Length: 161
Image 1 (tube, rainbow, N blue to C red):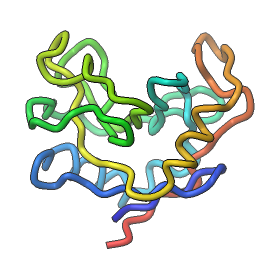
Image 2 (cartoon, one colour):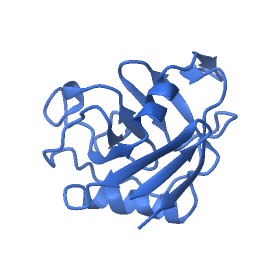
Image 3 (cartoon, rainbow, N blue to C red):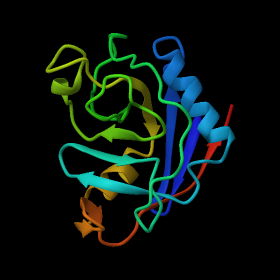
Image 4 (cartoon, one colour):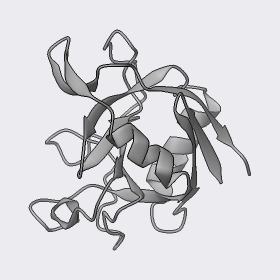
């Protein structure tokens, strides 16, 4: 279990180690490096997803490790409460950023519209916190849309075993 401590409460997740070993190892390494502390939820879209894991409060992108192979073909679906690796249009471009699905987003699954987004974990406790983050007021900041008007931060991410 891993605890994501946010400025709005804690979210506990369980990693899908067997189904997404590359994504899980990548995530665990960022956790071990304390990379996620003081990053923000920089993209919040109600009834879709909340995204975090790579930007600071001043909207600067943190320097990441190398991009990883996309594991979206692992048969895991982008269901409400699952976590998936964020990426650019390039299939194998995920690094540190991830999102939590607020609803079933089958169009993000492998083969839906493209290779898809690799699901690597699920929320086991704290979905109320996820929903509270999803409900914050958003606006535009430093050229980015859907940014919470009042910063929602990741305080720390802990590997609880």
